Length: 217
Image 1 (cartoon, helix red, strand yellow):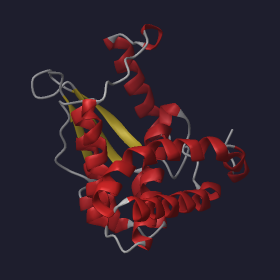
Image 2: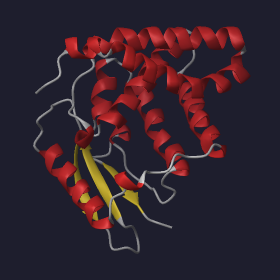
Image 3: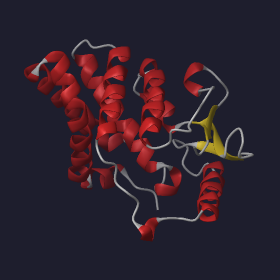
Image 4: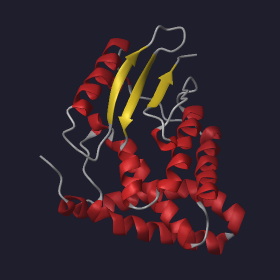
């Protein structure tokens, strides 16, 4: 069942709380750079932009359609729009987000509960299932990608993304200039969670696909 705009409005407190939690990671960088008062203004402006966006956020499916990643891109877009109100450009905004992610490297990372752990075969099947679902194109605003099995030497597995939900969303908001900086955040997240990540092509730069590759170390 497709989620309507009204359903997102009903989830507004939950979505705002998710935004506030992420904004807490931006605040120290902003305060260090711009001071308390202006940092507060920037975060508030970004929160307002996020609230305005909520009714129009496209539904791209649930967890198997990478919804969590997509909502991360929505929050980053709201931050960019809020920063733009304060005459901060895309490059600086991207740098702040990047540094905010890297600042978490000193914090203990949550472990996966044993009940949620998957075997390597189960992980592979989940990746293949998500690929199949994406290629059905049930949600036109979503991701489309294929799973790539690696040889264990060059890489273990990967994805080729030919359609990106974030790219579609950013284009709708005339925020194409921010997309390359948002894409760079993948490398910051990889520092925390997937150090074997690499990518040489992105849709944001005009390439035909984003070639994500992962290698265990």
